[in-house]
Length: 211
Image (tube, rainbow, N blue to C red; front, side, top):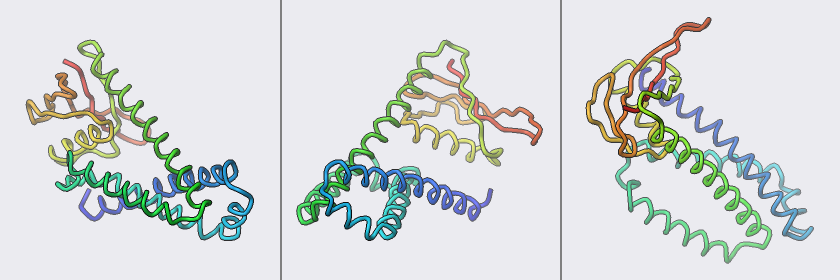
């Protein structure tokens, strides 16, 4: 995959995932209005339903874009730097909320609950994956299908690093090769590139085996 194809794939991934997230937040905001706001606030949103829907779609795409930033290895988003930016944005959001109409505050609060809920579910899923991987007996293998065959070792390592970022696993290389020997959350594993065949052709996998 060349660089332009990679950028195009990332663009469509952000677009579709962002639209999905935007629709979830939009429904959550409407539910919050229905439960907590008066009829007047709900009527205001209904009168501008199309505009609010487009705003939520754009917001979902923007949030998905920010979600991908850690994978871009930007120094100002690593470690404590990310927490400083998060605190600054939170203070700004709370400051701006004081000047918003009641119905907008209810919408933002509902969306915050939805986002925290999604984050909590993703965290629990990632934690469960990490625990299952680390508690596995030696020789047990986790098989992950890849969209395509890595063209180089660095592309293979990139697949592994992205997997660890998404599942919040610490990664330390012991032997940087194929197969690789790594520590995932401090536990020794072997990571290999393998394949199996289907009617559509070969499917390449990243096999993670606890040593």
